[in-house]
Length: 113
Image 1 (cartoon, rainbow, N blue to C red):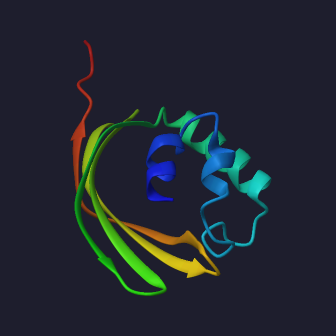
Image 2 (tube, rainbow, N blue to C red):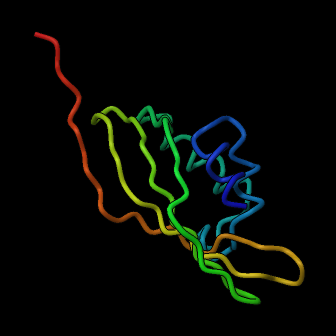
C-alpha cells in the first residue's frame, strides 16, 4: 500500500490511493469523495512528488511502520521531509491508517523579478 500511495498520491488516479487507506484515514469520507476532494486540493497547490527513499520499517503480525524520506514540490517551493506510514492489517490486507510528516525542510521557491 505504501508503494501505491507514493506512486499515485497527487495524480489523477487518487482512487487507487483511496483503496489502500482506512476509513479513519479518509475521516469517514467515501473513497470517491476523499479521492476527489484530496486531488482537487493537491492540484491547487501543484503537488508533485520528486523523490522517495525508504529509511526504515518495523513489522509485527498486524501493524507496520514505514519511514520514507520524500522530496516534493508545491507552489511554495521544494520540500524535504520524513513520512511515517502506520499500517494495520485487516484480514489479509494491509491498509494505511495514518501518515505523519516530520522533519520538514521547506526551500521556498525563488521568485522572478
